[in-house]
Length: 294
Image 1 (spheres, rainbow, N blue to C red):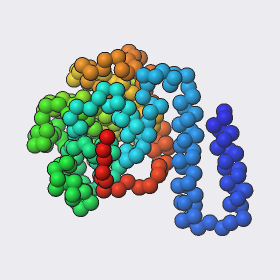
Image 2: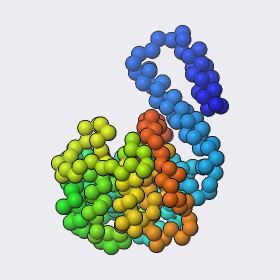
Image 3: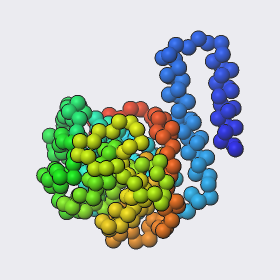
């Protein structure tokens, strides 16, 4: 394959240059950081040469990273380009320290929303670094460990009815939390799925309000399980990202033929390519939002 040859040739050139040098662990880390984006670009480009991605209604080719963990920023941008933006509003939980999630890029485009985060250390960082955004009310922050019993009251303290985006990434009870939400009607839902379970397998962890992810594959729910739930809630799966991490759903009443629709989940499913998640892209994210205009 051309992609493999490109990477091999690059590594040969790199090895030749480095053979006369002594590297410390810091040097090697620096080298790895330099190599990762190149390898990511080559691998993802190679994947997208598959003829199935030539369908203009697919979302994978539009993925890119600004502040998201993977390529979610680009996919979400494309989804809203197709369906339009109504309220510039979002709810996201599992946001970490605020610098790498699915809504920071939206904040920098003038959106407003709610972050819910269970880590006291992360929420303190957000209060410190996003203080101006919190004071203006553009961003609301709640420190809480979400459960299916408290999620609606947490959200309702800020939002009710329709919002543009709901993003769920808590590495555990994701399925049950989405199932429980009934106080808002998101136009788009982004939710992490467990890609180790290939369609048509329907699987989810047992609900445990005290669940904390241990780094194993015991987390979340399979794509097939989430698609079944989405149908009950009035949503259609429209794509997954190349890493095999997140699935994207659009509310049925606004699909309007703008996305690929298939009854075969394999047409959407992406296997676990977590090695694509480690590639740093550009400079680190800043909590300063800057000025945005259209």
